[in-house]
Amino acid sequence: MRKRVFCIVLSCFLLAGLFTSCNRGPATDGSFRIAIALPDTGAAMFHIMSNNVRQLATLMGGEVVFERTPLTPDGVMSFVENQIAAGSNGFIIIPPADAILPAVMAMAETAGVY
Image (tube, rainbow, N blue to C red; front, side):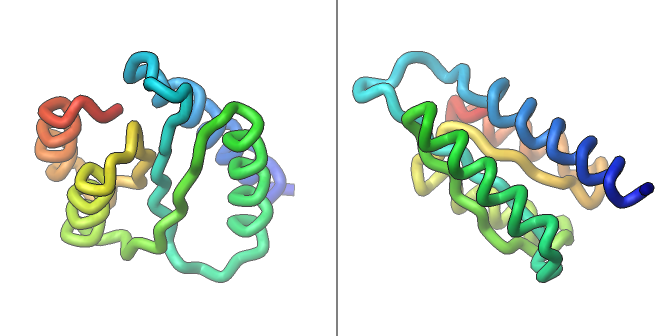
């Protein structure tokens, strides 16, 4: 039961992040790109959620990129830098430490990514 509740809550957070991170402004072709950092767990739950989020983004005219990222400060910072360079309009991360959040926010704000 706890796993199901956790899965539902996590799915809601992912969808909320997807909807709220698309507010960069109107793109010329109406598309967007959201990057999501996930740990490489191999769990079926992540596979099912990623398929659902991909389908939702496709229906909205966008793209979702899932990148297997180690949940370390260096891994998350590398993910953010790579996705900003790749032209993502937004990203969803799982911060491994509060200390990296100011640096991530500064990079995202400078690049206009949410």
